[in-house]
Image (cartoon, rainbow, N blue to C red):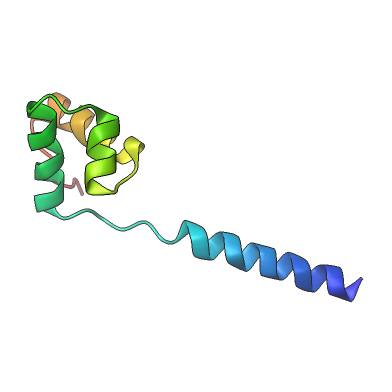
Length: 74
């Protein structure tokens, strides 16, 4: 039983290491996403080009369309 607990702890640690912590994108990188969008790049292409998740790219574009800004909100 003890060895299975150790295995579970190792698996949990590995998952946490792979997922990492979220980090705010720089204003420059958010602007780059919008620039790529304006050049008719797809969300998938932008994601691959800038090495950021598609959901993040989509969120930045949606926010820009709705609010006209990519700045972080308080």
